Image (tube, rainbow, N blue to C red; front, side, top):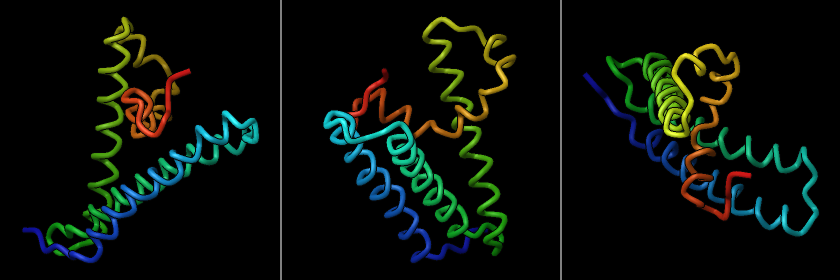
Length: 131
């Protein structure tokens, strides 16, 4: 059923680990030094999420379900969004929001795209915090 391409999978794993680690570990230093403007800190935050998501998709395409890299990449995108939606619902309901409030919020899908950054902030990884 799966015919993995190990170089593609390892490239995805390295991209998921090294991209956010390098970019997000730089972010607190820029913010505390006063050198980071709004767009620089946003670009670094989004860049880390972009590296993580790209690695996720590379791993999915590297697994090649039924011999198709496209199916693997599409499946990886769907799973990434589902994990993000589950994260947003679980995190916000733990803070007292109702599922109905979350469903009516049109920005929930956009927030769901950035779940790796939110988890890093929650765990305090790389010196990141919720503000």
